[in-house]
Image (cartoon, rainbow, N blue to C red; front, side, top):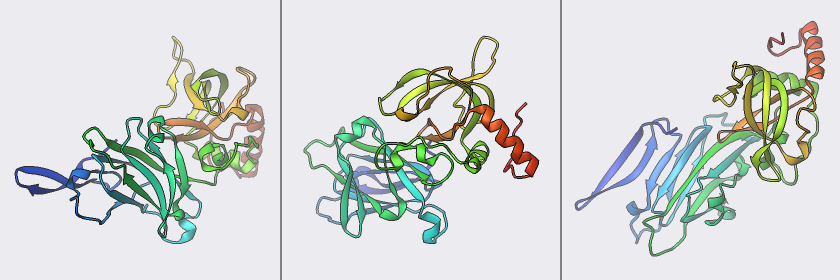
Length: 293
């Protein structure tokens, strides 16, 4: 959600045009190609300094460079394992989005790709976003708009988010330590069963899940289900090779939230997790306390 905007205006006769608009937290930016004078060849620089936010470029003309400068460690170690993922709005059009590094451009999203809302990710150290308007006579209905997120490429269940990696997702089990960390640090964690596919693509189906117990969640992904409000229900995106048969067994379900959607992470059978957690508690090695009763 966008926060209050800080706006800078410039007057051209009787027309008042926005030059630049940043949200008050500098996470999001809104601009207009109408403020770019046709004879100028310079490219506007945009700086976004948060782990997530958005960009809207109305009536795109010329080009802008989007520099993602999050408030993380300035050393390369602080950003080496961080990726940037962008997701265009389905109404986004009017420009191509490139990854720019030392003058070289690599196409991330063409103008036509954006209507599909396809997610693209790249390493933060690879460069900035170069957004170039597609020349056309009528720009009155064109808006380039996308969300961005910073996503760690390492950590419990990160290998399950398909956009961070080349090639198909491998459903390798998480290590014991990763499972213990996942139940403590994931955007959602609970025990429950898988249902059938609800929607999504063949590569990344969205399946329904029913949780008997919910340890934690972010953004209200799971709602109380049933007439008596017993259990929680929600939807989780699962890479196709990792889908299990509905109701096959009870699992510890953990995962992350990207662009408002839940993605499955570490998901061992719940009985295996209970044994692992009891051993960790006995050894004083559990990262956090979970009420498994």
